[in-house]
Length: 273
Length: 315
Image 1 (cartoon, rainbow over the protein chains, first blue to last red):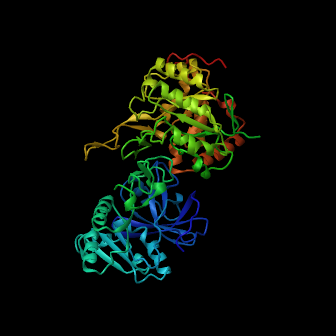
Image 2: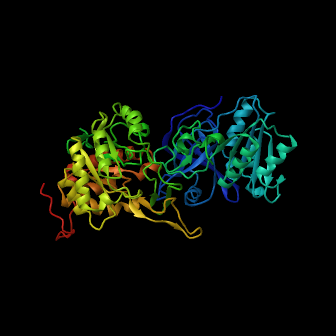
Image 3: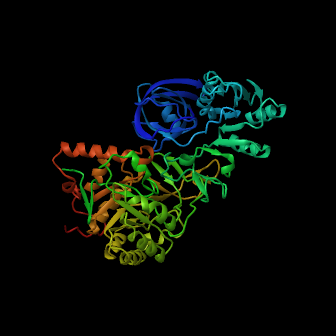
């Protein structure tokens, strides 16, 4: 129930669906040959167009959703890698290396869980919410989802359909709380509407993650982060995605851990971030 | 018959395709992505006597046609490698090539002697050319310095020993000839091309260490030229390294004189790249009446041969 381990494979897989879900984002559905068990939230794939020239590297995307042999990824168009994926049409092939990394450890049913997502950082939380709903955790699971504007709350309805209670925040106040998702988290904790003894799981742009890490440390929260470190290969061979480890912490004495292989999800207490 | 069978000196390999050092890990774990018989030898990431933390982030970025990296030889050092990696090598289904790095003459000697003593190491590659670490270019640019380090290492091992050359030189032939004179068994041609990417908006280099090494398809013409020059200038087997990602690229290198070809950056995007290339190679060789041996060095240069000062291969 907490998500099974499947060996990573590299395949050229067919695009079977794509859906716009914001001014700069889309959902990409990819068919793989095998029926997969429900995977751990936070595992990721490296994706790139299978044909044509460039880009030279794949890009990492958390698994957003899965149904049998169809995988769904939430993609925000940011640079050349995501622009190349945006140009692909249904029926075309993507090179997919999957599943990679260590996702979130789905918390014990009795433990409250608060997910904190900024923008495209909602990607790992649909599956996490589904895991929790399957465990019967409707009463102690929350998804906090923030973005600059309401139309950048990507696929908010799809995420809400997983069944976990949701709280929205927008920088411009166009939907939900007026402010960023960390300010909303603070307000909810201060008011006692969210429990401080929850496990807090965060994913989003680097600035948001740093803000979250600072806040969680100050508040003494038990927190996990899914990092956005730039990756070259995604499967542990190129050494381009190091994150600094906490000295004498659970990740050992070496200064670095590879985000792709040891992460991308890290306990906040295990890294210097 | 295995049409990919390849002999590099005394080393008998199932395939001419090798991993490039630094592109397939510190240990054999990533072999799970490849099918048996497709990879000739597993070349592992550089090991140095002492641990090295490597360079600050960002360590890699992409641009049109290539990748820039500045990892800085991050590795946990020889004693960690001896305890944790070497024991896994005996069970590795392909020959393993260990890659040695160092700060000075003595360190290369220490690494070579250590690898010589490890049962699972089939051959040794000397990384004299990593451009991202302080002092790393001396041995790769000065023929006399290169000859002295290769000679010292030669005294430490009877295993096949390859010298990986740098492209960041005015002429590669004196360095190739120095390696041959000092007793190298093969030349790996070449390493990454030193470069710089900047971001005008931040006024900063795009890599944390400033300079980086270019790899990928964009460097293939540079590597191709140097493979040809080294092939003409020495009698040593040449292991090409520089942006190969298809059977055509591999056969181009073979025609320019390569005995084997390392695949590096291509494995980042496709961890099974080597298996795909091997399959393509078998198909091309089956559909034609040539062999790798018959193609090797068969480049028809526009006469008269005009590559700079190179002596003609006599084989």
